[in-house]
Length: 169
Image 1 (cartoon, one colour):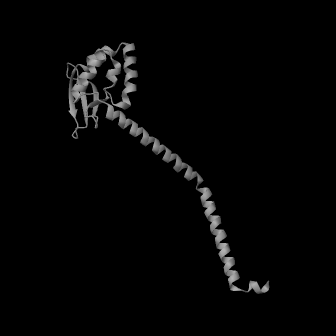
Image 2: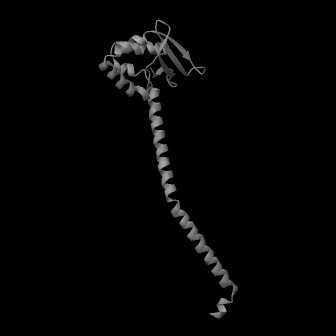
Image 3: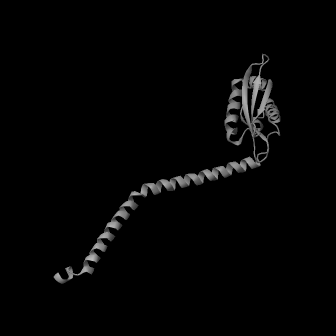
């Protein structure tokens, strides 16, 4: 045994073995410590994939959406006509896809509360439309008989069908 302890290759082997054990110990400690990070990355990737799927579904809805006018004024006119006929489902289709359900709920509540007539009256007042420089959005301001602004809204153009849609009104 004394002879083997004096050989250089034995000590080289011991050193290599010690380095290997130290390296594996560090690697597996790091690997175990990274488990929460890997889990978080997997959740983030799943969230990203879900967002992409939602975005694709929303894009498909926008591509199929043919409601709206070729100008903001035409969209407003079509919207008011639908409200006057109390066709709230049709009126909601002049809104951007994301805001339709909220509008439908609000307008039904407005009718129940007796405010629909006043809302339609305001929408029939004189208005001014300002289209953005890039022609993708428009602001609409409503004025009473004293030329005082009493209401406003925003419209955007559907990039796929080139129809103007109501963002808020």
